[in-house]
Figure 1 (cartoon, helix red, strand yellow):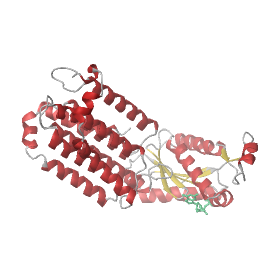
Figure 2 (tube, helix red, strand yellow):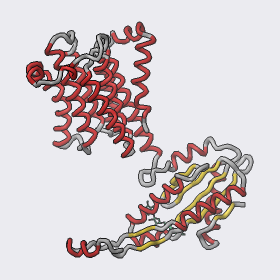
Figure 3 (spheres, protein in one colour):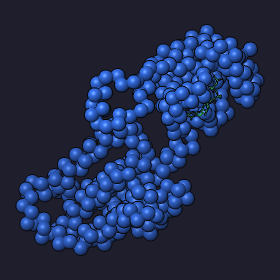
Figure 4 (cartoon, helix red, strand yellow):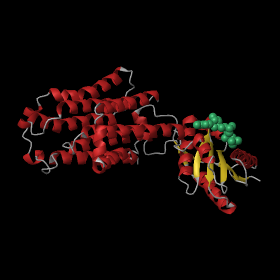
Length: 399
Ligand SMILES: Nc1nc2c(ncn2[C@@H]2O[C@H](COP(=O)(O)OP(=O)(O)OP(=O)(O)O)[C@@H](O)[C@H]2O)c(=O)[nH]1
């Protein structure tokens, strides 16, 4: 869950409510402040080579411009009211397109077309005769009726926004979506809050700012992910380990572990299967309780314990070793059927799949008083070497 992308939205709502005068002072800098923030976020994304963020940013900028141009009159005006109904729908449609589609690279023709779409869709809403279309659409009166005299949004708007929000949240969780998709959800929600509180002064500016901050947060989270998380195993990698080691407690222990005969495994089953094994090992180690696992590099992993009880360590490491050694790895047949009839005959049968096991060796060093983390790492590495030398698939403790 990346619900932290909703923090700017919550913060701005609380500030609006508690310090309205202060917020009014800041809003004097609108709309320049909004365009400057959107531009700066875009610049930051560009500097980090995260061009995909530009699609959402350009949609936000275009949407804000349209709101400034067309939604500043009272909603009693039929044209304004029609835009207030259709614009959030169009905004949502483009946002969902950005979520569902694997975004093309920007300098390519597809990327440029998508960028143009994000800019042009909100503007197109201005050019359509929406009031007439809505009047003739025969929508039920209850659908368009305001929720109350103080809240001007309609029941229809409330329902479709709630349904989209619930489905979107469900999908983000189901697919364990990454930072960017959560940032887009946060940005969308902020803009929907604007429509729900459209009568409040400067709401479009504040909510566009909240949307911009949601994207900034998710961009920062993505950069942290890229810097600290290993893509294959999804474990934190060596840079994160070094940061952990710099604040390692006195009572701690470090374990270096490595897959046995992994070169032979790769040579036999191929590098891709080797990658799957590392991924699986990463998930086994990452789910162990009471220990922090890192991918040190290649087929080497590091475990950090924040206690130094040797008996507990020995028991835990033996458990880890046995869990890996007992795990059945099913390797599917490498050769594919030549045609579909051969494929059909093979389906349902165990068409050449094989179950293999891997083993790991582990070297553990318990931190000695005053010992530097470099020395600790070196001792854990030496213990690993001893475990390998003693026949592999075992735990060795450093002296
Ligand atoms: N598939 C895959 N293989 C990797 C990766 N990183 C390192 N390796 C392989 O891991 C193997 C490590 O080989 P060695 O250091 O000789 O160790 P080993 O064969 O496991 O032998 P022992 O450690 O002595 O049991 C090399 O063949 C590397 O190519 C990776 O990300 N994916």
